[in-house]
Image 1: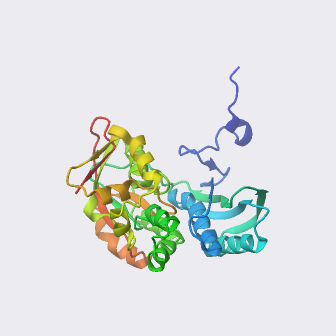
Image 2: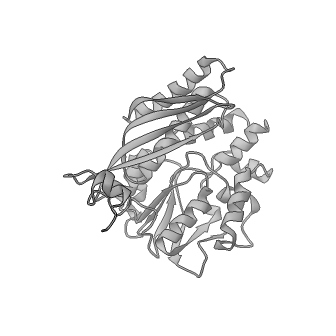
Image 3: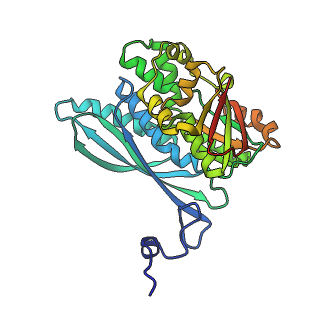
Amino acid sequence: MQIPTREEVLHGPDTLDDAGVIRIPGSNHCIVQTVDFFPPIVDDPTDFGRIAAANSLSDIYAMGGTPLSALNIVGFPAELPTSILGEILAGGAEKMKEANCALLGGHSVRDSEVKYGLAVTGTIDSDQILTNGGAKAGDLLVLTKGLGTGTISTALNKQQADAEILAAATESMATLNAAAARVAIALEAHAVTDVTGFGLCGHGAEMATASNMTLEIIASQLPLIPGAADLARMELISGGSKRNRAYLADRLELAADVPSHLAGLALDSETSGGLLMAISPDRIADLEDSMRREQITQYAIIGEVKPVQDSLSVRIRG
């Protein structure tokens, strides 16, 4: 007797889509779910709530989904004023409203430090599922937000980030990836991933592996949050950059002409970063109009998908 899988027991044998999402019986739509939470990376509680919520929604958008509902996840020290928690939750609620996503409640625990995020449920058209596999040789790589949030957060912790730089990073991190996802769907992107903790190179390597390709990134074409380059030149790179470099090992190739600060930013951990998408060169002519229509301004074509080369996942050249 064949023992049924957990998925078959819970959902029936025909309700799992090939991408691993749950197909709604009798419908061409699927259910997608994601969860994320983390400690504050900015000082303002409301901004932290907005950033955490945008970050939590990002995986839904990266799959081409539409968020439906969410639950707050909170860790909060007993000794802090509850008014701070109220501001955090208000920031999160603001983003949920913008995303037209119902906030249904959540759960909180006492913790030694503040943590906040959300568990999000969404739906997705089974004919429009975006995955990080499927990139093809010759595809152009497009990044929809500037890099540098990890570096700017590190500078903030060391009191070396001025208000203007922090404001630019906060605006970027609090921006939903909904518009970028619509661009990816409209341009029939072959592969999409959001850029978060593993950085551009780490998430790019995942795309390369899933697609059995190698990504070639041009360092001089990377979009950067204003002020991030100067901070990176001061070596204010987060610990995530070194961990990501060590993790990639010989799967990453850095050309000798790549400036060290740009290499650091390409490797650095990002919070609520943009979408990295592989788009056919046949559709790239529509990119500018699509971005203008969606009011996305800080995007760039940053490289190309190449045929796989041994174990190499990502190559960065100057």
